[in-house]
Structures are given as C-alpha cells and as structure tokens.
Image (cartoon, rainbow, N blue to C red; front, side, top):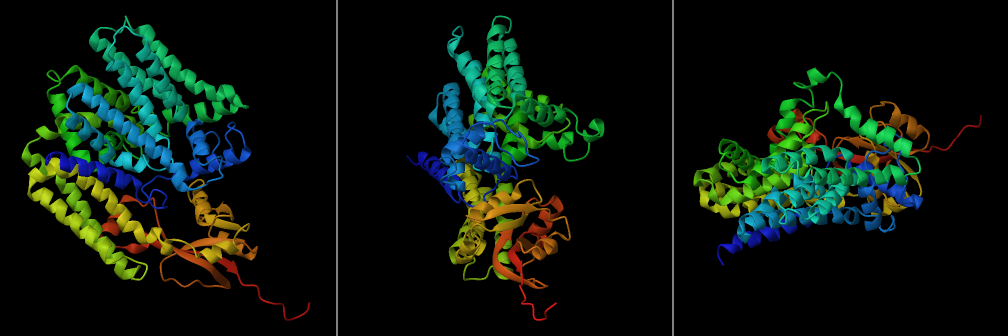
Length: 547
C-alpha cells in the first residue's frame, strides 16, 4: 500500500492540475485559441455546420472537427464560456493518457508501468499547455498515435479490423488538423512493416489506412459549399506554402524555424521531463540492437515525425506533439530503472523553476498587488512548500523516484496559484461598468489575429472589435469618434488628455521574447509582465459659445 500511495497522490494531483482555473484567462495557452474561438462563435451564430465562418485573414485556417466540437460543447453558442469550450479538450487529453497507459500495460504487463507512462504523458508541458485550451493538438495527437498503435501493436495479424480502426483514427486526426498527417503516420507504419518483413504482404492494408485518412479529410471540401476556397486557402495556403518559407537554406540555420530549434522541440514539449527524455533517447539509440521491437517501433514513430517536419521551411516544435505518447511510454518503461543519481539531476530544473517563481511572486505582491485583492498567506506558503519539496527531491533522490510526477503536477498547480489574483476581481472589470457597455462597441488592441475575441468573455454583451496597437494615432482617432477604447498602460501611470477612465483591471502580457523573459525572472522588470488595462472614452464638454 505504501508504494501505491505516491502514485495515487500523483493521479489526484494530475486531475487537480488540469481542472484548476480551467475557465480562466491566464492558463498556459497559445495565441491560436482566440481565433479558433471566434471561428466557432461565428459558425454557431450562422446555424450551420459548414461553411466555417471566419473573420478577414482567417479563412479556412483549420479543418472543421475542432469547431464542431466547440459548437456542440457550447450548445450552439448559447452557453458561451471558456470552461465549456475547453472541457472536451481536457477529456481528449485524459483519453490519450489512458491509451498510453493501456498500451504500456500490453507491452510490459505491469499496472505500475502503465500508471507511470500515463502520468508521464500528462506531466509533459506540451500536454498541459496544448491539452487544456481550445486547440487542435490533442485531438490530432490521439488520432495520429492511435492510428499507428492499432496496427503495429495489434494482436491478430491477418484481421483487417485493426486496420479499419486505424484508418478511422487517422481520418479523425486529419479532420482535426491536416491531411498532411498521413505522411508521417504512413511512413512510420511502412518502416515498422518493413522491420517485420510484412510490407509487401500488408501494403494494400497500409494504402487502406492512408486512403481512409485522406477520405476523412476530404469530407470537408466535399461537404463545404465552396470547396475551391478550401483547396486554395487551406490545402495550398495553409499547408503547401509551408514547404518553403522565405530563403529556405538560410532558414535552416537561423530564424524562428531553424533546424536546431526544431530538433530541440521534443525536449521543450517534455518540459520538466526534458532530461529523462534525453537520457531515454540516448539509451535507446546506444542499445538499439538489443531493445524490443515495440520500443523500436515507438522510436520509428518519433523519428518519422521528426524527419517529415524537418523538410518544410516552417518548422515548429508543436508539430511534434503527436509523438509525446511514444516518448512517454519509453520513459515510463524505464522510469524505475534509472540510477539514483539520475533522479537528483532530473529534479534540478524543477527546483530552479520553483526558486525563480517565489521571488517573482513576492516582487509582484510588493510592487503591484498589495493586499487586499493580492496574494494571501496561503499563496506564499504554497510556493515555499514547493521549493522545499523540490529541494528534498534533489537532496534525497530516492524521494524523486516515486514523487517526481507529483512534484511536476504541484508545479503546474503553482502556476495557477501565482496567477490567482489576476483571475480574481483585480483581473476583471467592475461588473456594474460591464453592464453599462452592453450593446456598445468596444475597441481592443489586437496585435495578434483575433486577440480581441477573449474580451467577449470579459465584456459579455458588448460588441468587441479589434484595432492595431502599432498605429500610434489609433487611440486618439477612435476616441475622437466617440468610441470606447481599451488601452494598456504600465501600472500606476496616469492617463493624460481629455479622457475618462470607464473601467480598469490588471492584465498580464504574453508573447514576451526570451530576453524579456530573462529580465522578468532575474531583474523583476514587472512592466514587461503586468500592465493596467483601461477602457477610455472622451469627455463630452458642453458647448458654451454659439457659432
């Protein structure tokens, strides 16, 4: 019983970490969530499944499955909350974790390894960052990995049924993300069949899986009233154009899509499990002649995605998220076999992160959020406890062997603890002022496509629109027109000019550069992190002189 207790605690913490603040504005996410939400809302308002309704600049950005999921979960937009939109994505994430555990149980036959693999998948930062917001990545991951696993780890070698299930899973992935998924999945299946000497025998079955995947995607243009637009804007514009991004050869070695950055993607996706993943991959390649066929197959799946997505000019680490189940299983199978000193080094990044978060929160508490409405005693106590537990894990490696996963989930919870005051009243506009803005147009700075869409949850009933904050004269021009305008200012800065502040709240900046993140963490430059968001309107002075 004592050996099971830490893993039971880790399972409970996993559910807690994924549930806390799920409906909040500041959970770890990426900018794509806002445009996906807007497309879902506009499509739901149209009353039809297709065509997808998109604002200018977002035409056919993704296949329709995610948006259909959002339409159903929000009851055709009648129950429009972030929580309802995100819950199905979390369900898919945990379903993927269950699939990881089930497959590990088939491979090793020991429940503890199945639990460890499932927890490892949930502990990856990419699972936490992409597996809670309203995004396509986890439906894509479940479909692509299931398509591979159903064939490679099947029981009956001659039955066509697993291949049909595989094709359906791949079709779901393609209808969620892109038809391009048939390439890495098909390549991985072909290599594994070759390793077994069955490629010629099962070639028609492989074609069946690929054909079903493409067939599932083709439902979109076949059912869409404007199939030519889908082909032009998504197939060509969103996919084929990524084969070349600017100067291809220069982009291999520098810029945001450089090869070395992409190849570091699996470790960025793993987050605090980056070191264990690196050790496991090194061990597998070093002992590749002695590892089992199943482990080689998992490596093939990982390498197929790495190879295929190395070719386009646009390379991003999130393209490798479908490989995280395979990496989680490889880590889970070996987790209990690491040397004791290994767990010490595994704990070092977690300790560094917790040690950086605590003084940062204390700085915010001192300079931005003094009580009331700021951090309470329990917020600080929780972070102190987290530092103490990571320190114990580093000093006593035996603790990390069974407690590392729980500490990772506690670290995820600490993110919610650190952001808690911003999710409270200080991060919201005054409800009485929000009521005054119902059916009024409010202009919001939108440096990213559809960024303003998130303000529909802050200002329910208002007509939210975006404006370009790079336009220096935009605010004064809009205020002269009598508009309500949202502006961002450093905390404590007075507003100059003939303007009245209608409402205000504290906001957190996102999309900082690495240099800005370093300044936030090491120099506590809070102007790069926290800002005040104001809704302004121009004063209306009475005319005193007749003209």
